[in-house]
Length: 175
Length: 101
Image (cartoon, rainbow over all chains, first blue to last red; front, side, top):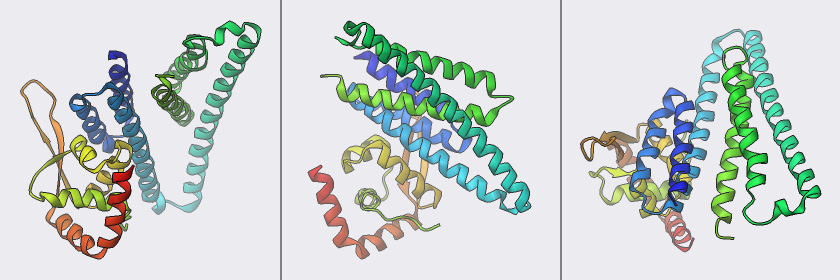
């Protein structure tokens, strides 16, 4: 079950790495607590819950930061918000389109080769999770300097997909 | 900004009030209150943001990373005691619900 504990640790370390400065202390706190959790499943659940809490905290920070911008002229502020929102939403849209395409290819593959859908669903995990997540990671790194908000959108979608996958695996491991 | 006093927040405040002088760790609070990390940490973050909770890093063993710990500030203790009285009826229901879950 070392894989579960490693997954928990990796998930929190990735979240910590991309956390804004204000959230890093909390991310480090949740990582450290993993060492004191005996059960591997409990560790994975702890990591999934902590990820949700930390992402929520980012949202709160962004909201506070946005409120700080209110002293700017209204037009400039609206333009800035529009630019950031459109960038982030387009990033999420691109990521969703890719994830749906991957799922579509897998569904077609299962239709053509039904044996793919028996036993441990490695082909599904590779097609629907590993490949899109790898592409997301490459895109985020490549786009971070020039198209920051699209990259943020892709990163958010990637994190939601990864968290969903971790929770799904945790819930169905014994099935 | 006003602190949202959900039943879970009251449970966390109550757990701190058991030994108000002692520092507590996140996982220990989670176990004693029955709250999952996804519920507990937002509450701790909000309490810390409002200066009701103080945080500190403690080195448990040499060579190992420090551990984050929490304690109510004097303002936090006062706040918790005040709302413990005000919301005592609601808190009993909340603890009962958490214990059942």
